[in-house]
Image (cartoon, helix red, strand yellow):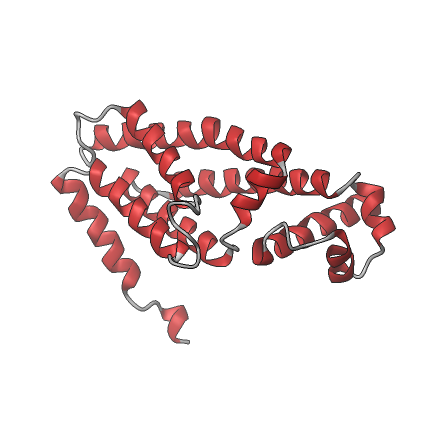
Length: 213
């Protein structure tokens, strides 16, 4: 049990550092120092940094599945689900180093494959299901090709992280995500859907009791 706790501690600590500073700039020494453990302890659980990055990515994807499944279960309709997912994505992007996904793609192919597999299977199916639900509810256009829009959404996720298109020294990544996500949503919606989406947005912008206390 203690060994499992140590491994979990390392995964969570490494993820926190990677998220804040990016992956390339963080060494195994940095992780050991941050967690107040020896490098020997790190290498007892992970063969090298590449394996650690891969396992951090796997753990993060499992966590993301739970988050999205909870959102789906608690959503009133397809528009509500999209609105909540949009908020979740904006929060994650705002808290993450802009170079995070780029570092993974360039330097850690195994971890990148974990992300690609998650995107092409889980996210693609989730987007398609949401679109089909929204069409049935009358919030999304009935003439939409579900497969095309699902693939379009996956493509926009990668485009946002392409520094050749959106250099991080010129663009705010949270704003880029928000703009591209809204473009996707409004492209889906009927007039009925647009009005409901705007209603959720306006409600979200109102001050909440917790923010005043």
